[in-house]
Image 1 (tube, rainbow, N blue to C red):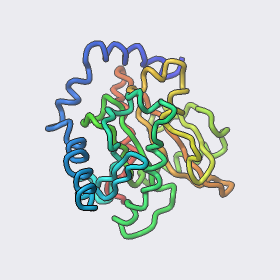
Image 2 (tube, rainbow, N blue to C red):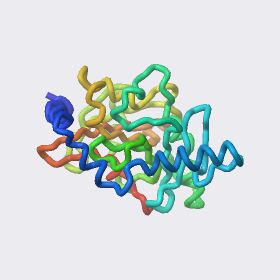
Image 3 (cartoon, rainbow, N blue to C red):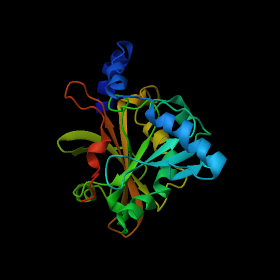
Length: 249
């Protein structure tokens, strides 16, 4: 039985017990990101052509980019319409915007904040599980990766592409998919995560996802997509942010 399969009954039970209520309460204002987007960034862009406090407003692809208060270079991609999080059924619809692709395309904002270029294997895009989030609006984190992560992932450089493979990082079991290509080329990590098990589309909130840039041993560019499932028994909260380095050391 896969890890995700083993936690799905627990996740379903947690939903029934409103286990996520304390998560929303943990933030002083769990709607703060949406208020910034809807009450500041979008109106300012429409009225003045200045998206402040956002850095970017892209109506065509339905997102904004906002510098996070945490970290020296971390940016958040936030949908310009109401989307709850990784558990939202909107993300699996055929016409859903490619938020991961857009976030990866805006990685230069991290480099601009640092004042230097970074190897692609030192930048990642991640989203936390419904258990770990503090905001009730979907947001993808774009930032530096933990310095040791590229070396840890090098051991999987030759696995078959486009297939989920079990891996262990930091003593915890995850799933990884190797994607070949400088860009995602129409592959949506949300939809890929929904293929882990037949039950996964209904249990997406149990997952966190990290898209890590990579350059493989054959010189080809690509990505590692890592799925981390909530496991209440071990205390794993589905927090892919642990693989980011907000200090960009």
